Image (cartoon, rainbow, N blue to C red):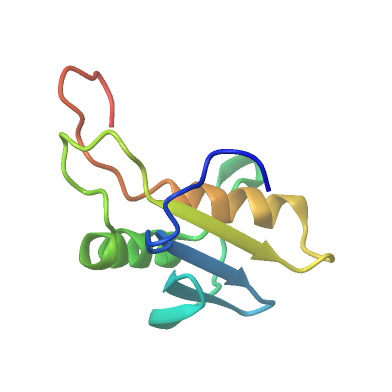
Length: 116
């Protein structure tokens, strides 16, 4: 085929996959199809004022898991780790947003930035 030949020897990136089930979240770090680390976290929602739903246990787990397994943790590294979120078709929109909020819990400081 015509075109520029890519570097086929590069390993696939390490990714965080979150599979949200009805009562648990299955969390894996993978490189391609190889599972490096796998854990299950109970999905216990906390309803805050005005009906805001949070998953604090999931957020705490993701912070610790990213610190142990994340690739781009240094403040001088501009790249971000990749995450793939799988949810069932019947999942409520509020649950998906709450899991995305928990996914933003791991943060690092960037030089010359006002926020992480």
